[in-house]
Amino acid sequence: QSALTQPASVSGSPGQSITISCTGISNDVDHYNYVSWYQQHPGKAPKLMIYDIYNRPSGVSNRFSGSKSGNTASLTISGLQAEDEALYYCSSYTTARTQGFGGGTKVTVL
Amino acid sequence: EVQLVESGGGLVQPGRSLRLSCAASGFTFDDYAMHWVRQAPGKGLEWVSGVSWSGGDMGYADSVKGRFTISRENAKNSLYLQMNSLRVEDTALYYCARVKTVVVTHDAFDIWGQGTMVTVSS
Image 1 (cartoon, chains in turn purple, cyan):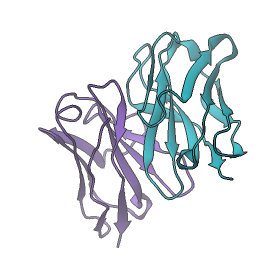
Image 2: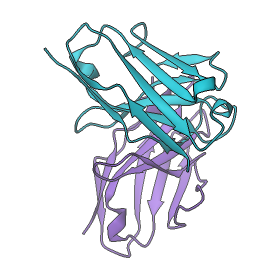
Image 3: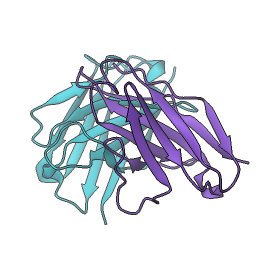
Image 4: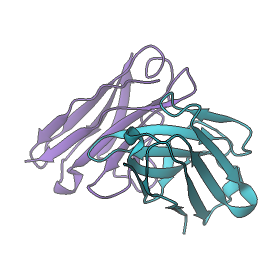
């Protein structure tokens, strides 16, 4: 199974940029380019924001971007807006043919 | 409209069984692998199980292996999760989710249902 580590919380002021990290182990983030990011507002289903490390689905703002270096993937939100306040989860495919999720990061817009 | 609607959740005693269903519409169901993801109250997301587009390849999280069985009925555009020997720690909102790319079994999840709540308690 995958144990992806994310910071519990990240905050920023409107207009600023923030970055959320997602650190994996050798059988997931480092091994594959199948890292995705999800946004979840309270009481709502998760929404896909980034797939395959840096690709954005149609309709997702270009303020959201993804990257990866070694066993750490990152999600950057530029030009932070009030509507970006939510929980964010990273996910990666693993060598065990399972899908792992990080513990989630609460983004607060100050 | 592309849509997934889960059903079958409820309150069940430990050790009992429950079967969840997920009805798909708005897309060619048998082109896509499907998965179940759960979220315990106040907790994060946990992948539970996935099944290939054909139903021939299935995978499970260690926490449910041997107790849960995923299946699909493409003729009915439906996904199922048979949950046996339920435990208190299985209490969660269960989402069904579609992968983004046709035919691929493990991929990002681009379509999610609203979830069905399973509560395991005596």
